[in-house]
Length: 143
Ligand code: T46
Image (cartoon, rainbow, N blue to C red; front, side, top):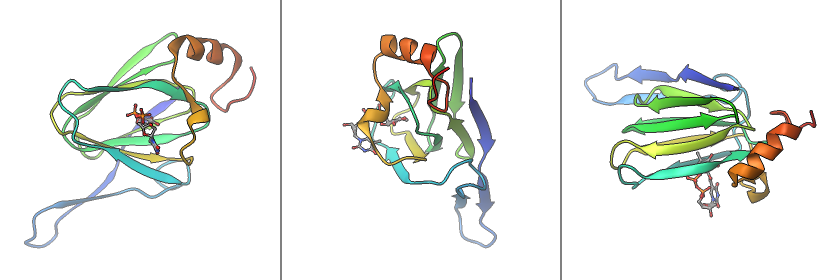
């Protein structure tokens, strides 16, 4: 299963100001150029989203506020990753089924993506996903 948990760069305030600063640099901290950034907010505890895989899109997921569980599936194995620290980042390769569960009200999911939005890049049916991974690897090439 191609995913990676990384520690994102943070800088504590070095003066009397409060606040932490977090930053991500494309191609340095993550293995792709960032073409798109989006976030999901105002979601209640127990909200479930995702339930899809991408064909080409690489993503970095992180939760700067709250606690969100990410469930990854590759048709054989399952991984549960809790984004419960602002600096905890999860890089998800294409070809991995992912689901998200909000563990706290108003948790925020931030995502940096390697591709522009394209609905054709989504596989939203799990049956179709299982058929897809029998034929294609994570680079979208026929296996
Ligand atoms: C993902 C997880 C982590 C756009 O028009 N542009 C965008 O850039 C995005 C991300 C979404 N949309 C539209 C597509 C749907 O009509 O917004 C609507 C909601 O998207 P979706 O149902 O895919 O939302 P989630 O939370 O299930 O999934 C999102 C991302 O779409 C997805 O790529 O990996 O967050």
